[in-house]
Image 1 (cartoon, rainbow, N blue to C red):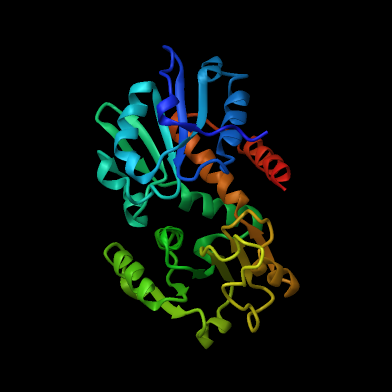
Image 2: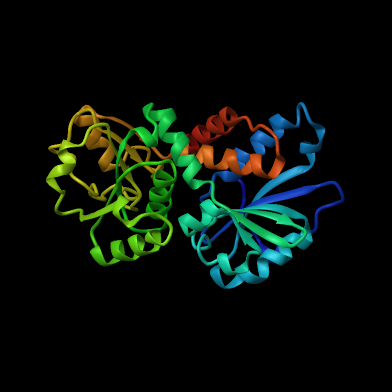
Length: 305
């Protein structure tokens, strides 16, 4: 059963020896992160009893509550925090430090409590990289990359590809103005000539000639069943690989088209699992059984249907 989301006003302090972890967002009731993390902590507790006293919650925190919520959660005994919409960018001024990869991505999804306050990391890029390799059998640095979108997810994906040494990343979006904002921000960290942009309505002909093409959907198109595909795959080689960051529904219009075209494809469930596993590794310093997380994620998705 899905775990109940909590509110700051009903939180109580942890007892000595207990450790709190949580995901903050608004809305947050739909999150399956507690199932993933608590199942892993239970498994880890079989070999290390200290994890029997760790717990992962989901907490409803609005944008206006975040500045007060973070120090309050530290007082209560929370030592690790995941962030989702709408907090990944807004949290930056509230942190004592942010690592280089998160700065390049312009967003933070993982917080660690220390003597000086909350520090920020980003495990989304890692999750994407591992998910693509696991589901499609490809490495980012060996692929020609085409990313769809111009929001935070697209920026994180683009940064991860550039950090891994991709020579060029193609970035497409419906709004060229939004694309300009993303490329300007990324251009402060990476060589601007490595990022090439285009309108989704006008796929550049040279893309059709790219070898080892990997298409990554970082738009929200596909979250609703009637959403159209963000890009027509017609004209692309059947060897093209397609990865959709959306995991619910498990098959978006884009993925349905990819299967019809005979392309290898995968959804974002593996990304969710690997970014979560990496966050738990950061908090615990131990190996995390990602296979347990994947099993729980699949069970949670079955219950949700």
